[in-house]
Image (cartoon, rainbow, N blue to C red; front, side, top):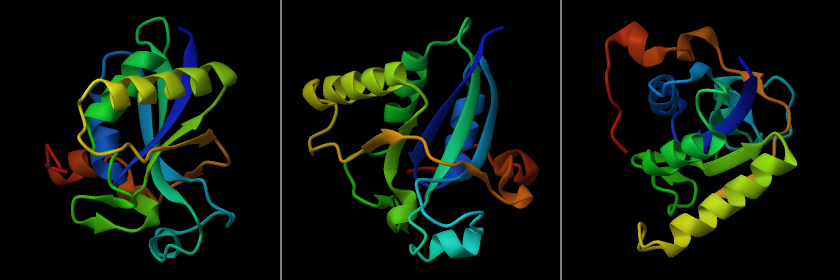
Length: 158
């Protein structure tokens, strides 16, 4: 196995986590916070919008079984990347669309993927997804981990 990491923000992390856990080759998906300035933020602090963090999911995947490009495709199809700081009823910068890259290769693939989706007619509005190098990842509180599994929920519509 060749384990790599990918980090995605696509709205409320519960649904994002569940979507990536369903991808063959994904070893784990952990809800957390990234892209902000405060060390060890709490959920309540992130929800204020003042920490700068996005709700994200850190995905560990076996790159011998699933490519980063496949994960990018999953990212694009599971949220609306054309709404700034919003996914469905969730509003705030913590719900922004973001790809936090772990290498120059991931950054290149993310930009190419964004351009491909921007040009292929999937979305009628411009993509506003942030692409940036990953900063510190802070694991969310335990009650956020595997939320759908713990509560018998199968899907969270955007």
